[in-house]
Image 1 (cartoon, rainbow, N blue to C red):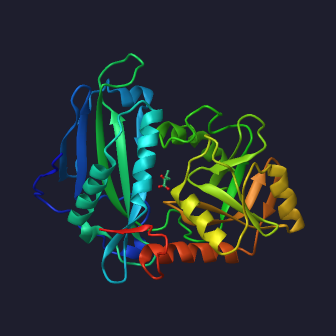
Image 2: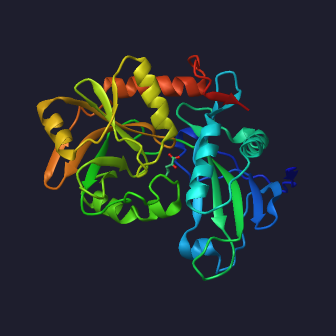
Length: 354
Ligand code: COI
């Protein structure tokens, strides 16, 4: 399929001060769009000026949340080139989410070409300052106007771009986590592994409770026992316990994070033993109190690697570290971002030049 490039009449004003970039509030001049109709497949692929869509109020996405999305980043490297990080993995996950949500898949090679073409046109928007990048948000929504609960026969797929700084205001400052045992994110057999908006909408109420407790994020426990760690609001989570890295296994209820996988690979190469196993919340509290729990950190495209400084569970709070990121958290952050920004070699071939 060809991609039509539509003219851009007017450019937006640029980022004035990159050090003030926040997460996801500013968008570039153009976006990629394509449409799907049952019986015709994907069509009308184009790169057009960034603009609001006109959507029928009965569109299925607005009623039953048939929607998926992805998040990946483009990095400005030292030599001014631009690189993506493992984009094929995001596109594969987009298609896995599509299958789970009864939505049409995209052609992986075509989608990567579209994404690269869009970034080439928007290259000026890829920021240069430390810790900044261009966040890429592929999205698919169900657009058929009908109130019956069924998979849509029409879809819109688009990619928007946002120059971003750190996800959390404090950058690499350790975050405070509130452990939820009253509310759950998903149940086994649910949509936990799909990157679909409904999972995030369902998390909002618990997030407001977390912030009432002075915390930044929610740590979800499993829905069956309300005991085993699953993931945090916008990231997977790893624990450094007894010198090993422990994280929840991929069993359908947590997101198969690409940053998670990359960090586990890097930590393994650094000589750490990795255990993907059920980890009970009591084990975390005992570990923190006895000093066996050395560090905890979240991983995700948006957050990269985010140190955790405190957990609150029921009426107990435990702190980790001295208010600064732990040494392994920092080392993993430096190694991953070093590969992404081209400061260190990329032996895995994770970086894809544009
Ligand atoms: C990402 O890390 O890219 C995500 O999609 C998390 C998001 C909800 C900010």
